[in-house]
Image (cartoon, rainbow, N blue to C red; front, side, top):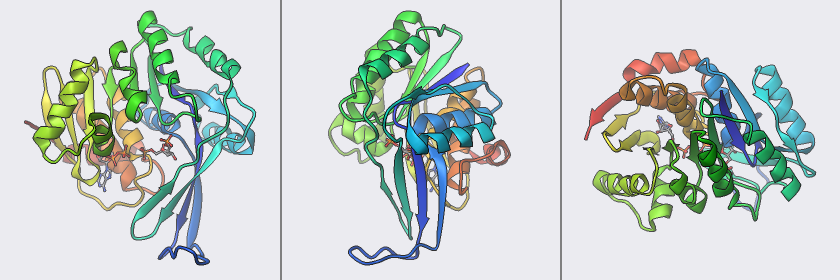
Length: 300
Ligand SMILES: Nc1ncnc2c1ncn2[C@@H]1O[C@H](COP(=O)(O)OP(=O)(O)O)[C@@H](O)[C@H]1O
Ligand SMILES: O=P(O)(O)OC[C@H]1O[C@](O)(COP(=O)(O)O)[C@@H](O)[C@@H]1O
């Protein structure tokens, strides 16, 4: 079973408007709301790939109820720990560019954390856990705390998070880490100008304990690095509609095809990311399968 842990789920509120004028009254052309948060998005795409998944994490309030209802409608299993406050609302403004405002999220208590640890302690080496996204304030150390538990239990896990949340887990040997270029620059502490520099930075994550590193580059595709392979991956062609959840979709595509040859696994990953970028909501398996043949993977 592929478990996802979303410490800080969100209702993603997409607001489309022709132009945003700061300090003025703006009226939107169209609004939509989706159940969001990185792990939840991973579960939705894993389900599309026909794999069993269960979404874990912290949820609360009327926004939490919306997310659970939406997951039920899509037959996605979940077992969240209920917290006191309301799950956050993240605002995604779409003009000719995409602007995101991600809220900080409700308070979580040590009791809430202990309930999540109790769930995780039941897993075994046939399972896989994906930890993804931000953590309500003051709890960044949670990533390493849970990764240590899984490492001791021999449960494979993957990470999609920023900065120390990601680096603090490396010693516990994550199966996949997926920084985008901006996040990788944050980890390394300098800007990465060339493909060679990005590859070197990714190799540093491998030396520190990661098994596979996928550096996503938005419209420019991705770079994949592990101890045996280095690939440059080109996106299939298409028109950007809404890139929210594209990164999460790449993680889901990769984890869902662990049993396949590495090139096929990478192609499923990037086809999933681009299919989501070319859709209003997250991609469907039909969208993903249609793009799969057009993903190019080249040795570097
Ligand atoms: N404009 C785009 N066109 C095609 N594919 C895209 C586009 N934006 C994102 N993607 C796909 O989604 C993947 C993840 O996007 P990226 O923006 O790098 O991640 P994140 O959402 O984590 O910041 C990319 O590697 C690419 O395959
Ligand atoms: O937890 P964070 O880092 O604030 O990110 C949460 C946001 O990430 C998303 O999961 C989208 O992630 P990506 O676009 O990186 O794939 C949204 O659904 C959500 O609003």
